[in-house]
Length: 515
Image (cartoon, rainbow, N blue to C red; front, side, top):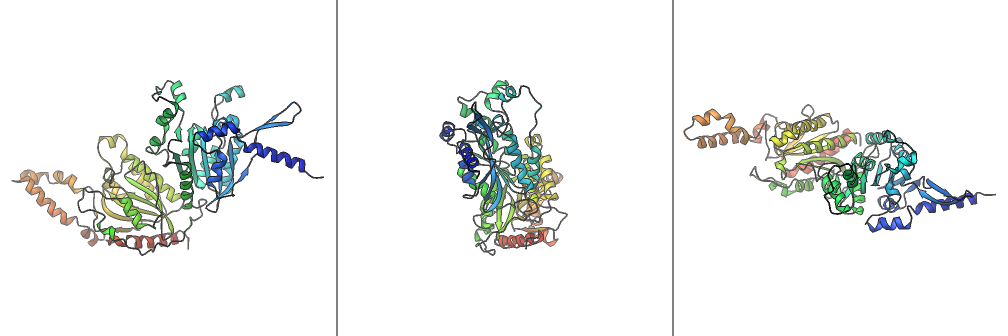
């Protein structure tokens, strides 16, 4: 006697689960340009690696004889898989079943997915579509009462943020808990035109009398309320892609820089880009005109291993570039000033981005490389209204608290408190400066008239006197004067930047224990 009958029922239930919300709902999902949950799991994971957990969970439907007639699967799928050959927990919301709402699901599945990640120290990927496990108003009628809100398993979400890499992809309109699950991550992505994020959607906003209802159609209303153009500019999400396939590729690439959990080393990759490569173009990168801009991204591409730059958060906090990259195969976190935006001055959002990124690097033990051209914090009434100094000091504090090795390269300017935030001045300064370096407590151009007010007023020709003062100070502010006093450790040929930083990366990872 065997258990074949039960195995046949298992296969039947599994087949019903694979139907998701049924042919019509799945077709509707596809007609909106969206992949279904199972296709998404197949696409983001290594081929054939996804092993589903709780596949047959859902609401069974039975006839009067107690025989199964159908199943409404839980609108949340998860399992163990591999990405880049390394184990992960992969999850996906199924929008074809009540839009991913909890009143069609089993909350324990989501809780178990999160718990598996931190208990077994596995990265977790969330593909979120809809309310992301949140309930709907219909839930109240089914329960027969209202309730004080609580999110089952949110403690596991928090534990994961402390212990393993968390990647979230918003792959449709995500509201409420779905929005919260998206931002509770280390790296988040939206798909342009497909994804929206909001605390509550347009219909709820209108019903609450918030005076929205500006858009002419539903799709436009969702975009205007919480589209990618909004949330990639305010820092709610990190990046935006043009397709789901691109989003999956970016998620996989982000994880390639990460360890599997806190306490494990990220992996070095094979590198065929010579560590001693010297780029002649770096010699003329920084213009002699102090007001002229240049491309810091071009500099970054020439310095790190070719093809490895992975910029995060390009749409917000734009005075700083934050990117993962490799030096001689070693993963590093790069913070780089962008003089093409606000001259590189840190405003509130830039400081917030730098703080967040440095904390990420420190948590997952990635050495930091800081390419500096910072004229200071943004000034003026608008900057004061935004609380720039508060966010700026928080960024500086994050750099001082970081315990991973940090190397800085001053390409041009380093002024004021923001300039001093290039590194922890109380620690060994692994620092190089280019001959184009220009630094001080404040830019000379902004303080001459105040500092030399008496001399200028007494001069027969104030303009001539001002030019004479500028000429004298131009000699004093030479970077070589600073080097004489060992105020800067080394002035280098810009072409030596890559070889020296590759040397730093090797020493940094040696200090971190990765021989």
